[in-house]
Length: 323
Ligand SMILES: Nc1ncnc2c1ncn2[C@@H]1O[C@H](COP(=O)(O)OP(=O)(O)O)[C@@H](O)[C@H]1O
Ligand SMILES: [Mg+2]
Figure 1: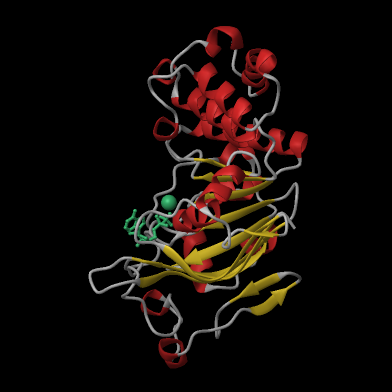
Figure 2 (figure 1 turned 90 degrees about the vertical axis):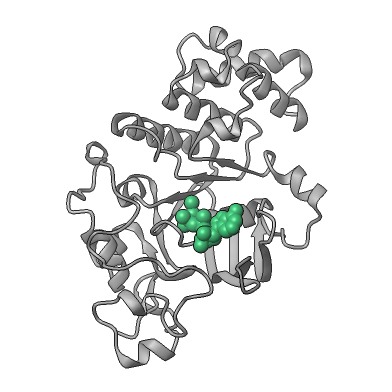
């Protein structure tokens, strides 16, 4: 197993002190597979990603649970040890590449820096290696691109550069947090296709974070549906999308009427759901029982006071619902 997250709790700041942001999260991601973590804005997807990378913002901390990368427990590592794992064993692609790229440094220099930090190749070969990687992610005239600055690239090209930065040390795990949300539909499909290609070459595991079920359906082997910090449903992509077992998953699907499985079907999907009234309760104001209780069209009395545990809905398919 490349990534194994078990019973993870993350607390974050609130006006009344630390509150649970992510609760009892379990994820398993084997090599060369993709797991999509889906859910509305504010559900805790990015905080989950940052906790795996050891990059939680100030005020956030892991309170219990385990995060293992290639069998190694990450929650015990020091900041220095985590820094060594980042880039080398795990890498992250962000929604807005401009925030991750240095605007005053050429793209080539930023890539060679990663290559040299992780001793991917000797310094004398770094330039050629970087140019080859720029070509590999589909950038034309890679030699010219090597000396360009990030602002000289379009959004899609910058995301390709981010992909180079992520793959260049050959990490076992790539976390892509809304990697296509800032791009237009045709470019979105190209970047997803690129991720798939890079995965088939390297065998990396990909944790794809998205509120876009189409993006998830294109790339992911498995889906985990997160709501208000808790897993509502998890299973093989086709099983979850074709036979959603949780009312929240059905709401997510219902809010995307044009959902068709297939590469040409990408469309913009709003981060909040027209089909489910109300909003994700912020950490600290979540119901005692099921996190989805206040918005669930099928809630029972039981759901208010008791938290449902995941139950089997099919092969490797589970949902946390009393219904
Ligand atoms: N840097 C931060 N400081 C304070 N609160 C944050 C920060 N980042 C996220 N949060 C809060 O943590 C919760 C989970 O957020 P996040 O993981 O970013 O959600 P998602 O990625 O699913 O949209 C939200 O309630 C959000 O407001
Ligand atoms: Mg996010």
